[in-house]
Amino acid sequence: MEKSLRLAWFLVLTTAMAVAPCWSYYSDTKPYAPPPKKVTHLHFFLHDIMSGKNPSAVVVARPNTTTAQNDSFGTVTATDDLLTVGPDVTSEVIGNGQGLWVSTDRDIPGLTLYMDFGFTKGEFNGSSISVFSRNPIAETERELAVVGGRGKFRMAQGYAQLKTYFLNIRNGDAIIEYNVTVIH
Ligand SMILES: *[C@@H]1O[C@H](CO)[C@@H](O)[C@H](O)[C@H]1NC(C)=O
Ligand SMILES: *[C@@H]1O[C@H](CO)[C@@H](O)[C@H](O)[C@H]1NC(C)=O
Ligand SMILES: *[C@@H]1O[C@H](CO)[C@@H](O)[C@H](O)[C@H]1NC(C)=O
Ligand SMILES: *[C@@H]1O[C@H](CO)[C@@H](O)[C@H](O)[C@H]1NC(C)=O
Image: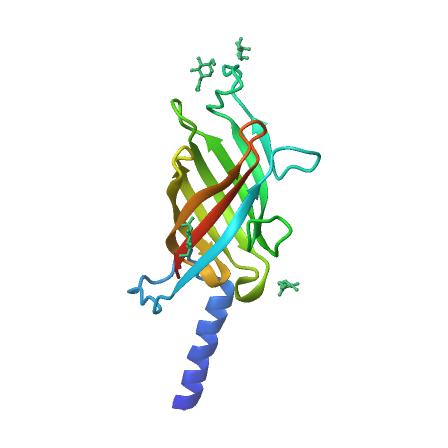
């Protein structure tokens, strides 16, 4: 008797659930238990090539108020820059830097970088780090903020230390050395 009553209740409940599913757009809120953190250092060179038939960085917009060649304030450049292990572009390609850089300094050459550095080789193939930072390119050594990541770099935080390895001021081609400390 008790068994069949339980079965009846079960049927009532499951049927009710099927008829009126109880949708919710949020889960219960629970304390966050972070997994242990690891640190990884990355070292590579970024090739930002604006010249030639196959540039990796192209201007997509600029304000119509800037006329002087040397005044790039407001210019937006989209990139798909190669990342290589050495400064030579023929050295092993380990990924690419896709995103935008915007000339955001009115007084001196300076950028804000919005870029995803994705890796295509080794342990971090398929993973990427997100950089969103001011980039004061007039300074020889500079630091950028790593604000996130994907794959093995999920929830990453960190910083990138940069040095301009090569710059052609006439056409804007540049090779930048990156040392990145990623905590993930
Ligand atoms: C820039 O664009 C605005 C809006 O179209 C126009 O009024 C202005 O004359 C343009 N300025 C220049 C320098 O072309
Ligand atoms: C650009 O060049 C002009 C003329 O050479 C100079 O007066 C101006 O200050 C320069 N602007 C910048 C942003 O360097
Ligand atoms: C990187 O991952 C992609 C997609 O999983 C795979 O096709 C490719 O062969 C991998 N490359 C290397 C060098 O492991
Ligand atoms: C990156 O680290 C290496 C090894 O410590 C060092 O030789 C190089 O100067 C550093 N480069 C930058 C851009 O910080």
